[in-house]
Image 1 (cartoon, rainbow, N blue to C red):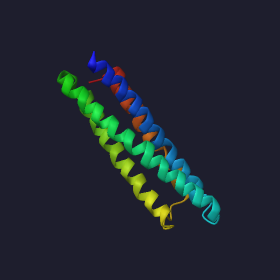
Image 2 (tube, one colour):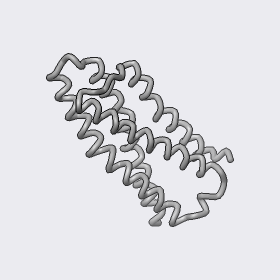
Image 3 (cartoon, rainbow, N blue to C red):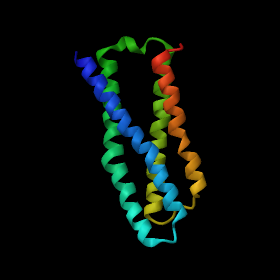
Image 4 (tube, rainbow, N blue to C red):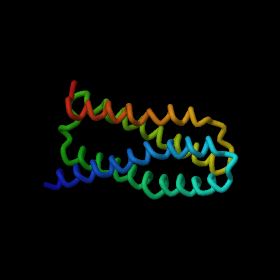
Length: 142
């Protein structure tokens, strides 16, 4: 029964993490497109920081910790290549997460030169990875 409670926690944590991964680049779009509006940028900087620090980072830790807990409680889920592929995609999401942090710091210091269009495209990365992870977990193709 503990396994299923951890699984529920894992899903809730993942949804929270993905919400940050989807929304923070959207804030970066607005920030990049309104660099000349200091008042707007000051507000967006606060939103970016709070979203990353108080939702994204704790959700990331909870997702990883609960995922490890699921593997510890049932090591048989590592059989088959689908879980290895999922973990690889999660590692890519981790890299994406920390790339967002790098951009957050650049915006904080008014040094980000990326365009709104760049962040619109960059925002598609977690969507594609989420689709792939969902396919792997539900269909277990290999």
